[in-house]
Image (cartoon, rainbow, N blue to C red; front, side):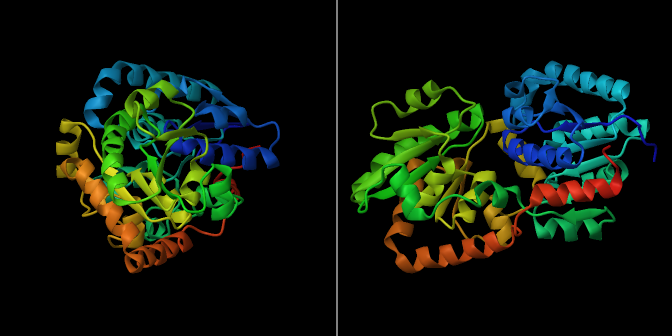
Length: 381
């Protein structure tokens, strides 16, 4: 394996959920290498930590098959730009964070350069079938995973892998207790808080939030003193949310997702990282997911799992309800929400299941453990 003498690292993290893990990793690597030059793709937190970004991070957050087609030329140019910069600067290592559609193509393009390739936060190849395993084995020198079952999976397929723990344990470890969170977001003692988490991408919010808002009226009729908060994200225009919420009595709070998840009596969330974050706070939830017609029907034939919610995949069973595509109606969301909140035994069992999921996320220091594993493959400086 060739090694560059240049004290630089390339990191590619195109998904918004990768911004904190990427920032954490940069912080840890720069702790031992203060002058380390980090360049690549990443969000505002990574850029604040010192990443020299090669693209506008807001253009990177695209998901689904049909949604990517209009940006095909953008991503083709970006792939070439990243390759050219890597070839020119010859970094000590290339670190890929999630974002498999782009990152695996980049890995294949740069492999001949002989630069160590480390993947942090695994693509969900165990869901999409094992066809990509041979590709990953050929391209990736080390896979750093955030769930224990992934380490076993990769090692069984001959890929060097290490479990470093889930970054949310570090991100949310100092969040106050439930009561303090409720007080901080203005929730009264007798109020029942139902949180709406429609996702961090524009397409997700447009598809998920209208149905969530429609469910609010049905839930209000059944649950007294119910209040509703939408957890907004900073990278999206507030008008996107307000246009969908309209004149409904629903509060929008931006940048307060952990306090909302911890303070809520129940969370209605899109499938993805938010389900694991909600599990960390052991808050009961209903998981929904809606995507484009073509994306859904292509994915149906590719995904090998009976469940798509990460919380259920980690639990190993359907610990929380999943409402996918046509099942994700306002009536169904409201029905599951009311049932969980009315049945104390069901709610308690769900909390116990979520506690078990939380215990599988590691004890913290995920960025430090990832940086240590990387240093075993390559000396950043």
